[in-house]
Length: 506
Image (tube, rainbow, N blue to C red; front, top):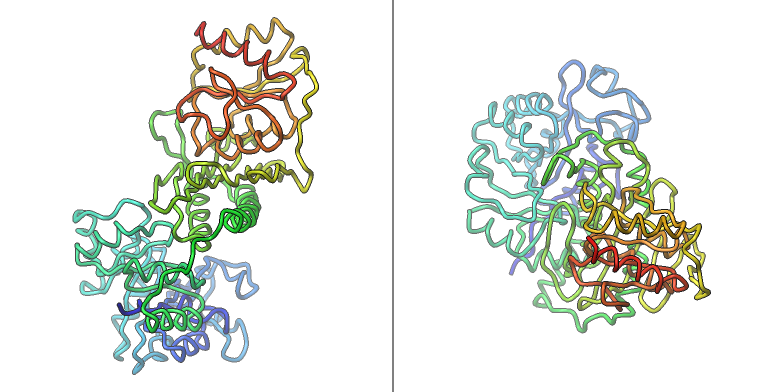
């Protein structure tokens, strides 16, 4: 098996500034067969190499490049570290064996870029990737263009998906890479390109799956690792990692991811809201973007693990499986109510191993590891077993979708008779996790799902709380689809009796 081609992401951004001629030169010198660049247009219609819509991140100018003439854009930077024109990049690679892969998000930018390439008289090979509308614009100018089809699904393409663009290549985030997708794409006559991989383990995993190219920020290191793997016959790992090793790495990764998700959720306003099963079942662009990010981060560290997410479904893997709800409380998020969370949980052989719950609006990460306890901001969470009265306490619950669950009214009345208040706040993950933090005496949900509740249930167990189904306490996860209750140990018996009576009455 030959190693995949390497696509140099924005040139060589770890050596020179991204999307500049020096970055292209380094990538070409490192042997990249394809060099990917991002292209946008200036106010006067010049195609330039730039990823962002504005000039701020890379060039210290807050203006949109589409509002600035080329003569002013050309003055930014110094020496060779400047924003190049697309025709300058084509000239730089003329006579080289590297293909220039032009990445586009905007259809108007695509028209300018395609016309620039159409007018180029040199021999530089060019391919195209990006948003479907941008690729259609390229096709309108260059009917024979080599187009890579962006793919954001765990389901493989079908022939009808290829009709509009007639792509040569399926181009997908590593988050969506599966053996089945590679197999189907090849059967359809497509090459498979995956982005962006900067670590050796996932690169070798992707190569073993049969991908045709890997986009990376580190052509040198990934190229050397793939060459060594080819020389050694693509060896398997010497041994499987122990549970302790996996748990330690997973907890550190989940902690970092949780803080990344907190920042992203707080800083990115919702721009798209769609419905799923019914008009009250919402999904936003934030849900999907967070899930894609988390899948990619996990795949980079644990490429062989399975993954099940709220928005994109199930990816196959070994006996380890991650469960993710990127935004639990989407209806709250879509309506500007600051009470949502992210739930991320790792299981091994079906048993919960690591879990984190991120609360973007408090800036909190609650985390747990089986047998190692639960923490919040480095504070150990531990519930005592002293008796607790229901009077004056708070119990949390959630609706069954947007309707009360069977027995809800009876439960509300029974708690009220005991001077206990029932709260419905809109995030099942937080409803359960808050009990582990000592906030409320108990919580219940109408149907367990590890996507939504796995991390929170592990938190309750590790904090010394009690997890119960109708029949009593459970270790590990409750059965999927079954109602469950979590409680402070000192109130568990009384609360369980009230809850089961309400379920029976419902």
